[in-house]
Image 1 (cartoon, helix red, strand yellow):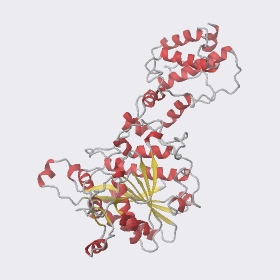
Image 2: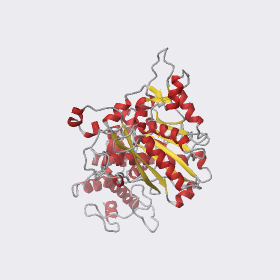
Image 3: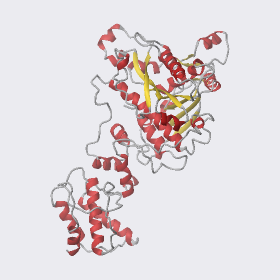
Length: 531
């Protein structure tokens, strides 16, 4: 019992009453919040046992969701430490036998929390535990902001992102995640205020941008052209019948330091995905129609290569509501106002969206390339999980007009494969994607089940998790990925590997619910894929 006594009589410090007083251990990956010893520790049998006890106590703090009954765990630990070491008969090294005994002791003491199985999904090293604890912080930690003033045009797609996608450039990764977070903010704002507001000043009062360098300047609404029967308007919930819905916003970078870092002042147009009943109905109108009056005239004249787009997307883009302008009108007016306000400066326009928002982003960028005149700033589209929008003639037109398009695609996302071509011999028009592609895959992430379902593969947070961890084809998941796992655990818990979900629940027994803003007092509309 001399060894146990030496371990118990360590210097005391102030700790929670539910935990024993233990010394700090410098450099412990399981105790990163404390500073550690100020003097070196000499190696001896007593200090080795004390270090083992500290290691076990640290694991206790991380793994136990609630304090263990008083004295029971500590008595078992003292009993285990007092036993003579067992001979390692496995043929492994001496260190491997010590670790086996150590985790074997933990399994006997905490059988419900540490069930060691031979499957790879059930094995977690201390380093993995430390990384998991960091990724369960309350907020995302972005990668360092490098100065991109000298290469912002390449990051904005001036060279079609050649040489930047595979492997993925670290600055481009950060830009993609930032624009994806802008779309998440649009989802959150919509679910906190799903109906059009009475006064324009209140239409984005719940909009909280993750990057405070940008300021929202305009709310955007999409309106369906579909008619709703009178009986349905009174019997059905509002989210199912409302024709006009808040779909996004325009924001501009106003922080001068950030403007210098980026090398230009950026105007962002942000669009969320499908959320209301009539938006879902518009998605089911896949017929190709001429994109504008000029294309319609060309079709009437019998021309073969006429730019056409999906009818439902064009309806949401061009239709005006009773109290709000059409999405097309609102975007063009606001961008013209901003380009005039910042005339003489280097400007860029970035249109970003997810799902339906990705489709509408293409229509926005296509029109802005002409509406802003010959002096239009460089225009780029950053889309996540977007469907096909138009035919080959439309794709050629977007490229010819100088719009740079980067589509982020999850390999298992079925939305990126629709609408499907009819495949009939008399049908000349087929759907075609536009621009460059960055392809990510659920199976690369160590935290996700490889057989995650279609809804997960289309989830925006899943996209941002995969982009943040993407190195390149064959490189594996980025070990220093910084994006928090809280949203994935809250919204897509069944698709997280069991070992991580279980340990995360032990670390955070009461996780933060981030599905809806706390100030939401209105009925919740039909959930979007990311909410």
